[in-house]
Every structure is written in structure tokens, then in C-alpha cells.
Length: 112
Image (cartoon, rainbow, N blue to C red):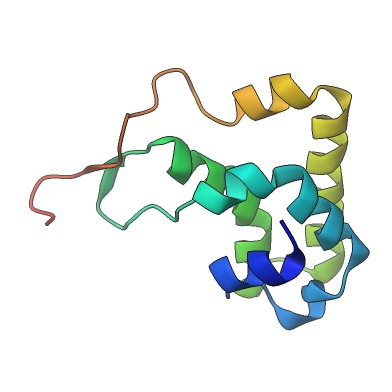
């Protein structure tokens, strides 16, 4: 996956991160998961794999987008995720989704 593809899927990625070489590495390493990643809805009662991918891989960027984190902190977090992945790619990817994840996102009572 390229950064351009990543930004097309997740327009919440701030522009000042889009030119970062680290984001290029991130898009390449996690492209398969990010292609299916989906932000869980507000009414989610149980998350599926796509929700977990989003929560684990996009949360640092999302917090920065909301201005709840700093640029330096988000870059450090992305680097840490890449380092964990490189140390054990299969184990890292397998660890993104808990064993009890829903087959598809489950919405809570009263949500449509």
C-alpha cells in the first residue's frame, strides 16, 4: 500500500504526517490490514477483525488528528509498532485481533 492509498482510505491522517518516510514504511508493513480496517461505530458492542485493525493501527494517528497527542509522540508510537512487527511479523499480526473477536461488528441494543 502507498501513502496515497492510505490517505484515500483514511482522510483523517493529518497532512503533516503524509510526507513522513515512517508513514511510507507503515503503509507497506500494514497495508493488508489497513485495507480492511474499519473504524467501529459508536454503537459497537463487539468488534470484528477490521475494527481491531483500525483501533490498534490507526489510534495513534487518530489521537494526533484530534490534537490529543503530539507529532513526536505519534511518530514514536508508529515506530514502536513497526519495531514490534519487524521482530515477529506473524505474531504481531496475529496479536492485533483477540481470539474472541466477533465475526462481524455487533451493534448494541437500540442501534440500527
